Length: 413
Image (cartoon, rainbow, N blue to C red):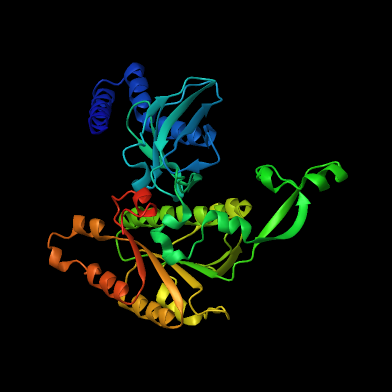
């Protein structure tokens, strides 16, 4: 562009000199043509800005971690004149779309359009933005280059991956001190809660065949666990002090571990209370049967980490009802990536109150080691984990590179 401008200035100087030294109509025409070129270029850019159309779309509405989606951006020229060079610059979350977004340039002929198809690999769970950062229009003579911003963005909600395990017995999750019962015991330790219309996806074993024959339509039994055990699950959505990209990786690991665990609990129809903190306030939800998993899954996909409140402060404010029959039947499951002394101390109180406490910990150590050369400067999480174990808290710890399957099969403790 600098060369074009220098060339234009040189031509303007030459044409001006010719007009003044050799005045005639031909040199005058050349002078005025050169003089109005910048004006025409600006008018053309403004016209293109007002007239061109841009649209974008994603080929699917539901994206699961690891999926590849196609993002399509289309630029349209609906006029009878060609458009000058248009460059489209995209923007998206760096951690998710790193090195995947291109910035093509195109010259649109009359009554034509140009489609930009970008294949995006969604590496982490979460809600992300993608769209046009700006459009850069260059005039025909390469004298001006103007950017236009304020374009709409598309949101991509990436759902966590749901892990399924073959030949996995429920009581293999570290045995959970026999907290989670054998599947056969669970099936026999249930009572009939209600009779309802059969829904697609329910197990055939739940169909009430005699009543279905009388009613002329399929009816199913809704079973309810009669276990006396109280299960309370807390997930810590407090954002750590790591960098943005490191937090995305760590939080993705925690959510994936959390979803895999709840999937197993609900598959065995074990009722539990789920408690967590969101930006708009405290949430408490109750689950009991596997048909609720889809609702839970949607919740897990939309969970937002923030600096709203730390888990130890939340635990202090809420009391848990203990079973009247035994002080050892309360089960408290903690999912966190923030291991602090305050959290260990409040969990010690819960152990003293009679709870069996199980902590699922997504460790940030590997992410910290990438940014801190001296290991002595790293937080000594091993000391806190050892202290927690001494208090009787069952620990399941995962590093970022660890396979969740190993944890749930009791191979990584």
